[in-house]
Image (cartoon, rainbow, N blue to C red):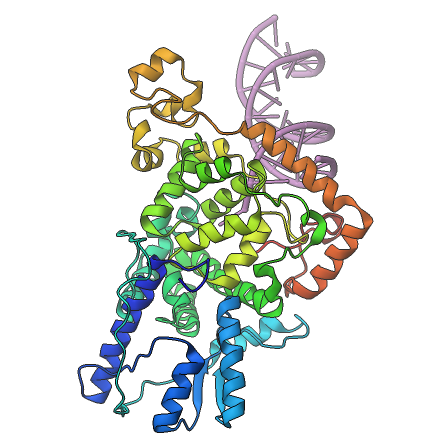
Length: 467
DNA sequence: AGTGCAGTTGACTTT
DNA sequence: TAAAGTCAACTGCAC
């Protein structure tokens, strides 16, 4: 495996995208296959092709990936310079390399998204080069319920989302029960480039126009606007990693840098495998294991539970989740992990109450029963906190705590309170506040509208809320 | 009919 | 898309 954030479920998705691209390019070239694939060290592969055929120029998308892709691209740039091969990298998603100030960034993003799509070429000439086979798998993480890759599936999802699923978007995205169908599910297609952000934004804007002009579709206007806003937040976070690549390894704000550095193997594994004794947390983790996807709010809750209630290091937490997300996108991921772990110093701390979320998002317990079969017979009254059941009920419902299902690994109210205290102490000092101010200037968004409660909230840390 | 009071709601603050 | 606490305004009800 190339790096600690990579997993076979991601590779399988990418592989399916490549296979479909291969066939599509083949059609343009009038052959069964159109893609020439090479595996191995990028510089060595390029050098070999250059030796045998001569490379006139390199064209690539400008990737904002992890440190591994960054180092690879640096090596390729270096090689291309040495060999006198022009290397063109095309900026993606409105992200700007070498950005100095966030001023005007939103307008730049708007303009990028308005530019016309590049048309498909009428035909293609494929060089007569041999192609390596695609590796079958890069690990044993099968994830059979994961989304399948390929542009046609991405387009079908885009159509179904904008034509009808978007109606339940605003209402359905918070609960893990409704989110799988209410959310667009386009994220992995955007991550792997099977769909372009620009084509998704443009399709969304057409739907917004339709909803604005046709009363029949007026009801979905809010959802569509919320969706477009999230697409722009997506670029915002990728931009953050582009501008501050250290956030993959170092906390943005040093206030807690020397705290929370040790993994507690028992607590961490219980969280990582969905055995915390909190049914809603465990159901979310197990759904993620099984499907490779979870809605945003529940991702945030899992992260907060690990980093606040269990006080585990954000990077270990982030790596585990990265491997489980089929749609792992480094820029979004590390920005979000740091925010939800309280490492940025420029966002409000969100310490979720996992029992409250359980009641709010899964009132009947249907979601828990689906993913935590140990609790299948426990009625709604006890399912959120089965450890409160009297022993005779535990026996009656076939779920003895500590035997059939674990007891809670921490007392969530106590550990939440402790985390809150530590956070506010760490960020209260004048030095910490000064650093927050600097980070805010450089890496927060510039909203076109004034924040609603600017004066009151400026006192606090929570100026900026992406959601 | 007006008063007292428990309980609710919503805006806002604190952690 | 935090949660919990505070407080004032409001509501429904008993008397």
